[in-house]
Image (tube, rainbow, N blue to C red; front, side):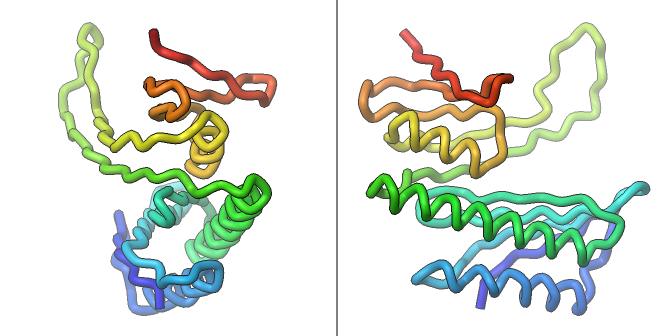
Length: 178
């Protein structure tokens, strides 16, 4: 059984929602040798829709998916489908390349702010994470798994901090620091 932390924003998480999320996320355990722990589920209600977000730290990486829908149960279904595709894609690439998964841990720190000044630059979110050695290809895979447009990593080949990013043409770029 998946060990999950479920949280609701603008919604009370009912037993029915909890049980439904648990049932759907339990399907993902068949892809792993060990039980999934520390699965974070965030359910949100907006005026124009409902959103389900799931973050799963596994095998030294982070899987993340989110979906907005008029029906929260449908959003949960789509998120689980997205995660299954990510897991399949991730495992296929690893098996094809015969490589070990990248080791990475992420610690998010949110800095709330109530100040809004047009003349001042305000940082509203701060992220800290440990840079584990990986190559550019593994960094691109991690970036795709997170659904981000860029990814900062420690290049084990050059022993420097690098950034990979997705270009407008769908290909990838690499920024190397001097």
